Image 1 (cartoon, helix red, strand yellow):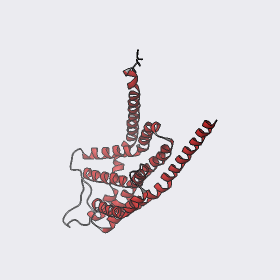
Image 2 (cartoon, one colour):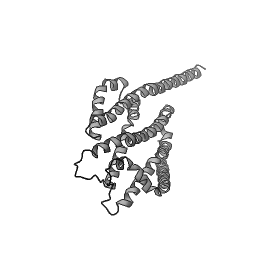
Image 3 (cartoon, one colour):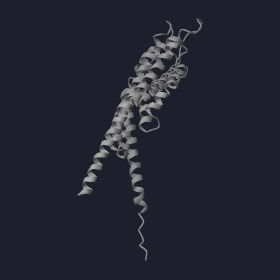
Image 4 (tube, helix red, strand yellow):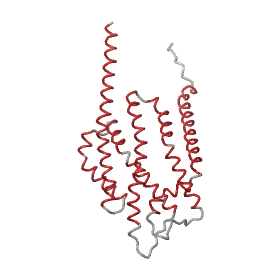
Length: 269
């Protein structure tokens, strides 16, 4: 008679997936609670936060003009939306920590050593992109737009339109400043090589200036202020990849050679 192997119960087979889903739900709940706590702490200052956000534009408006609200609900919902988005931005380190806690058990040691600096760097670079947009780009953009209008047209921007505009720029510059992380991941995963990216440097520079032309007013100074940092961030990503990725590969090779030496010694015994 042939041996009959008992099948695993269906409940036991699904248990790992169910446990992962339960953990994912718990971490999502923790993220939502953190965002809610930060939002509640900031909501009292919602109007002050909007005033600070609109300062780069209001400082350039002609005397006697101000921002306006064309919708009845805008005076409430514009600061509300700003506070909610700001709460998400401020809670981003905690969000990434929860993501890291969920995926870390499935990573190898050398992957963990590289992933932690990448997570920390991505947070810093995202905030740096937002700060660069607020302190450098906004004064140039708003200075340009408020100076090119006809003389008989009063510049009075709607508060909701202004908020949507600056949030798009915040997100765009935050993503742009992640270029070093993206470059390192391309090299780390083997999708590209250092030499291959170096060979495509000319195309990257052209792409940076094209994006600078699309995201900034049509003047050379504004375009250069975005294109040049993008190119420098690309070069920084290549340099960091050479340092950290190759170092990680060397350490991995050393560990493999050490394990092979131990296995050979045990086999000789």
